[in-house]
Image 1 (cartoon, protein in one colour):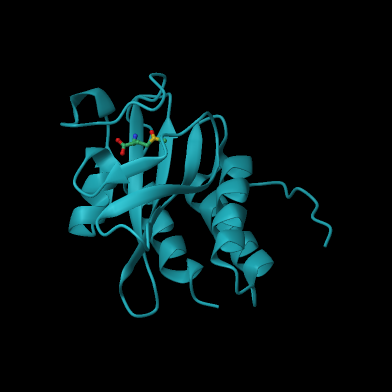
Image 2: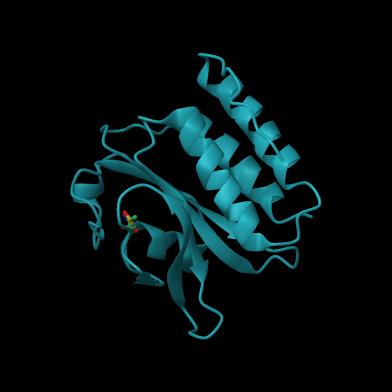
Length: 164
Ligand code: SME
């Protein structure tokens, strides 16, 4: 399948609508969860770099209860494993709620995979039975890069990402 880069709008909310439509169109009918996560991390990065510095998924390890393991991502080397409750991803996994962090250095237990990261948003991804499957982690070198628009749009994407 060929894919031509699309021209995104300058307005952030519209840009999200465009890229989310594109992601869902590319993965329509795709049964591989890895392919779905890889497509989302790639196209979100294409649409939002350089604000997005690291974009990817930490998935719930089926063999280890309460532990996330790195999945498809774009960016610099991410740490491999994150226990539930540890750092921003671990907090999202433990309480099932989006974490919007303006200053990661002020977040208790923040895991600094790359010290250039200054702010981040982490959104839980649930499967069709409502069980936590993964978290989507987006980091930025900018301070306070994310707001309620990012939260609303990324939560909308994550709600649809595992619906085949
Ligand atoms: N910042 C994350 C760790 C993962 S990476 O930055 C890729 C956290 O504290 O959960």
